[in-house]
Each structure stands twice: as C-alpha cells, then as structure tokens.
Length: 110
Length: 114
Image (cartoon, rainbow over all chains, first blue to last red; front, top):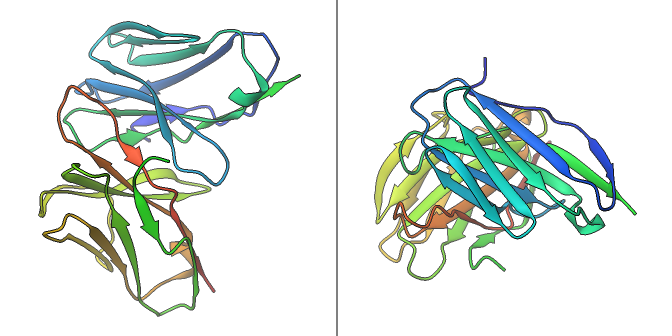
C-alpha cells in the first residue's frame, strides 16, 4: 500500500465550478503538506503549503488538513480553463523527503 | 521560470548504457532533490543533497548515484540502463528552511531507453 493515495481522475468540471481534490495518507508522522500543480511537460509548481493541521486560503485556493483522519483537501473556487492541469499532493514527516501522490488530472471545460 | 536548470531536456539511449543528468539549483538554494516521474509510479523521491552532503535517500536504485558539487550543481548518474528507467527526471531546489515550504522544480530531463 502506498503511503499517499490520490485519485488519478480525470476530474472534469464546467468553468466556474468548485474543484475538490483530496489525498489520504497512512503515515501519522507527516506534518508538512503541500499541493503542486503540473502542466503537461512542465515541472510541478507549488500552490499551497501547510504545516500541521488546519486550513489555509490563498485567493481562489483553499487547503485543508485533517490529521486525525489522515486526509488533506484542496478546493479551487471559480475554476477557469487555465486551471486544467494535474494536481499533486505532497507530504513529509521531516523536511526534505517528500512523498507525492500520483496526481489528479483536472479538466475545466468552458 | 523556476530558476532551476536541467540538462539535457531529452535523452535517448540504449539498454546497458550510462547517462548523466545535470541540475543547477536556484541562486542561493543549498538543497537539491532528485525525483523520478513515470506514468505508473508518479513522482518518486530519489535523493536529497544539502550543501554537498547527502541528506535523505528515497527509492534510489543501486545503479543510480548522485552528487552535489562545491558550486552546488548536482548530477544524477544512471548506469546499466533498463527499459523501465525511461521516465522524466526532475531536479528541485530549496533554501532548506522550514518556513518557506517550497520546492522549486526544473523542467525535467526526459530519458528514453530503447
């Protein structure tokens, strides 16, 4: 069993809808949580970073961490076609050795 | 542009061969990370170097090795290549402080083993 599980999708939503993404994990020692966006043939770029539990909001993006359930989420409000990409969750118990989810492909249709 | 430079962008080689991938981190970043991304495995952490020293090791095969040089650039050496080594190899760098939480990724080196 993988330490980090993420539904590969694809997840198709109409423009303007809320995109809801999530990852589950098994290692209770994870305390650093990140969401990355990866466009085709490009390197991943950081969207959100959360240390330990709680919520974090940045513009249209909201990240949630529920350590008791070993579950993290990313919400994208007012989705745009430019949000079409693969979204990767990443987490670590100590700084550096990050474990990534397989990524969820998101398609936002005009 | 993340500021992380990887060369070559594409590489095609044969089984049994050896290749070297190069990474220049962002100016000021002391940590370099190597990741392998394949279709069926996602992004797999290989190894991390901090200021020239190995800091963390992931699922890196014995046929693979890496090092970070005094000027902080890093090289990933892949030897006795197999078909299954075909993948995108990403390098990332960070300042290595817990406050930033950001890994900056390069564009990757796409390796095809025939």
